[in-house]
Length: 354
Ligand SMILES: [Zn+2]
Image (tube, rainbow, N blue to C red; front, side, top):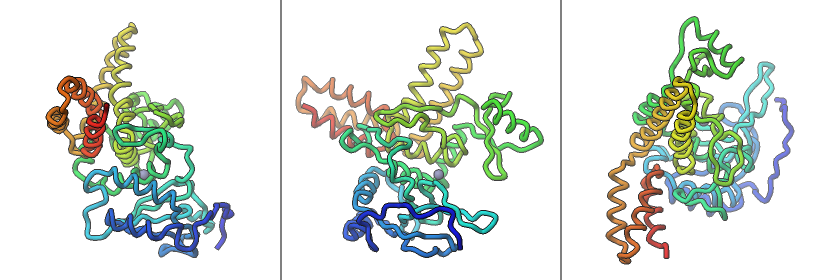
């Protein structure tokens, strides 16, 4: 067996069983999951499984993010979900040589794998904060946490709500003779003549309307220039990315799917082209539908939930002079929440304010 890449990872203090096996067991018990790691040699499929173990800092990040998950996020089958720490994903080249991929994580058959590539903090929402999800500047989101929630998106992607989300996004499965030409057009100009972007995934081709999937994306501390690039690669990844953004950075998701598209409509009003205005309105409405479908059908959060929480908050606020301001602040922020857990955190936070 030959390896393309030399082992360069820093083993740190992680020994055979990791920095803190006690914490691993504690997390396993708290969330009903199993923590494992690759211990060298090869796995059941014959892939390299270089030794690596959970570091204590990684376990603490893991625990924080598991506490923010909505109910049912860890699966509903009889088998407990396994979180496996692995060095890297490998694929076998035509000549039989195993080559390391740069994947951050992977999910397959009840096993979420977390790779070294997710441990650095240079990508996506690493460095971002969220009041609703409870990540502040002192402990912002780590890349590994986003990878983990992304993979959990794949755990729940078979649900009916997710199918409704895909439909709301407007992904289309493409067949027929024109597809090859559309793909070439997309590669050349970034978009085909029918205003759709065509993406090939193995033997399949999908398309979406240019302008109805975000590009770039808002930040609250992070610096990645386009947090949506991977999301645009295919329907499954778009869902997994939206799922992870909803749980970790709901304010930024709201900005990208609701606020920014509405702003583009305002900007388009100043332009002479009626076509551009109509397009901006179409895009805004399409993205608002995506956001609303994700919230209602995947996270089961409704405006009625926000209203009920507002009333509870009003009832619990003893200082009558502050009540109206408090409740309206709650309503404004809760409009961007995606999970019940975020609503509860926001309500608790509002009550603690001086
Ligand atoms: Zn994925």
